[in-house]
Image 1 (cartoon, rainbow, N blue to C red):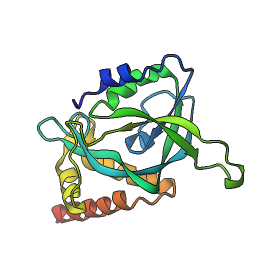
Image 2 (cartoon, rainbow, N blue to C red; image 1 turned 180 degrees about the vertical axis):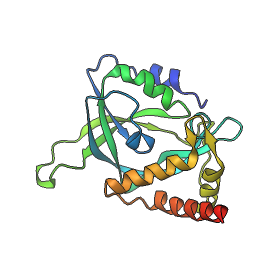
Image 3 (cartoon, rainbow, N blue to C red; image 1 turned 90 degrees about the vertical axis):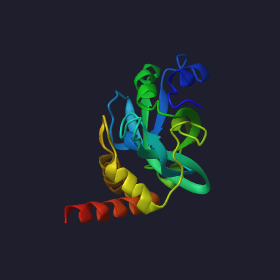
Length: 198
């Protein structure tokens, strides 16, 4: 599958018939909202984990030297916390371009983080962008140290790859969310950056 998924997303999943759609963000969408939204709420999805296994040719890297950004992998019994945005369908013209590097839109069940457990409403349906192993930009797993080294040396039109990781880690802490994968790579990145400064 091509890593440019704009037309594929629009063909396989038209949204014009809907008044609004919930979008679940688990990476840069948590802290970088460059689009209009009707409301936003902390949320989570079941059965998925964040992983720095996707290449970025257009934001945090280049086609010649892609950076590493997040995708989700299936993980039964796990939950992934992020931010949900209620948006109008026309917003996806911008979002499909932003998330075009190998990501496909998928509907999933959203659960609200800030609802009391005894008064939790029925889950909502929302969209999430996923980059699976069959897209051309997929990089796959590696050690925390190797992923951190890759991130440390990568840069693209949206800035240093390290900024993506550090801002995400900060945003997760502000949500009181501990993500072992993200924080382990952050720790390795900071160690490597400190060694470079010596």
